[in-house]
Length: 353
Image (cartoon, rainbow, N blue to C red; front, side):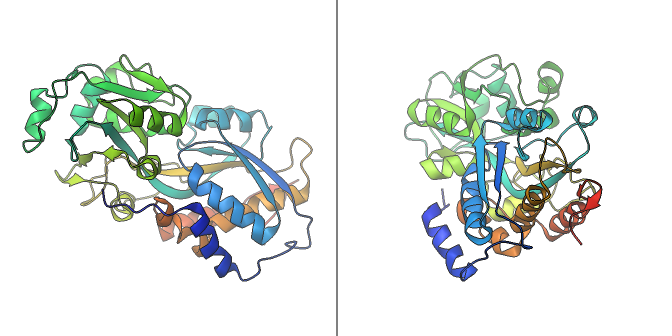
């Protein structure tokens, strides 16, 4: 493992030097208290970003890592200002809500973290991962696993898969990948924020899955890469479409986003066919209503919401993504996001001019 994890304290200190005193009220508005909820996948990044936004703009941001499904439900019920989600809304979900926009905030990876005594390197393929989580491969020394890891002595122990118990964008990304690489998985389980895993142990949130893996010998689970990096848990290299064994890095995650990106920014980049791409890469999004005048919200609160997203898309903030084990957004994604933000309104009036 070659990642170096830097503490949020160090990142905040660096940003404080960059901000040179920050700002008070923006556009002569009163500082606001923003609330959001959703994905745990980007939580370490958001902790840094929202703290710096508060220092520079004076707006407090409270964010609850309750899982992507919970965040979207809260936004649908109009009890939060924004939702964090690792899964973009489907056409059906969008039809059940007022119009929304999706704003990618960074890129990340879902890794297969494992706890195997004496095993410092593990190679996996999509087909093998699907068969492990569907219960078809039950022993670590299964001949197919051994064939992909000829230089590793795998134990004759039972595999303990670990998966999410809550509605999770990480689960959506993981199962989206599995449906692309395994016809059996696609027909038996499919893709979703919640899936009926037939074997293994459930845990809540990325922190919960990472904790179970770190404490459970012979386990393997899917988790946001930053949690594996932070806790020093081993994670596998995964064979991509080009036949390369790839580990998640800023470069390999960014390579997965080299294809076409739709204007509404709802896209999956799992199982990319780009050389050097890590195959379980993803965007993570903040979702807001296009019309910000709802549930008694003020113009100032609407402006603070949009300015927070502009702040996240800024070069200043994007350049720290890799310091907390994520990857920055491609230029074309930032440009599309800013264009979409320019359509956000309050009582029909465009907020950005």
